Length: 70
Image (cartoon, rainbow, N blue to C red):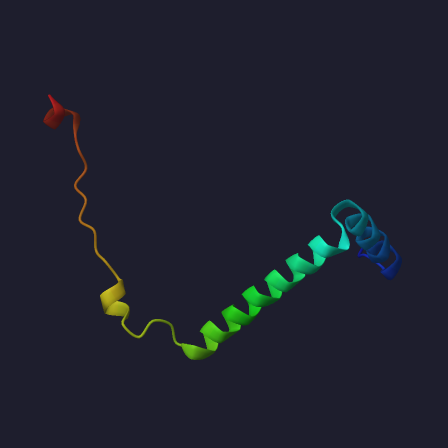
């Protein structure tokens, strides 16, 4: 049970009436910019951080007990 072309057109028309075409255009360009930046970041460093040892931090946290508070 999916959306057909008629349902999508009706949904788009309702959204256009509620938000206006200028707002939809600005949101679309923002999303396009995010996708472009994401693809650029993935292309620049496909294997993840090369300084993985430097970025990982080990935090040694000792739990507090009620006996220590008294």
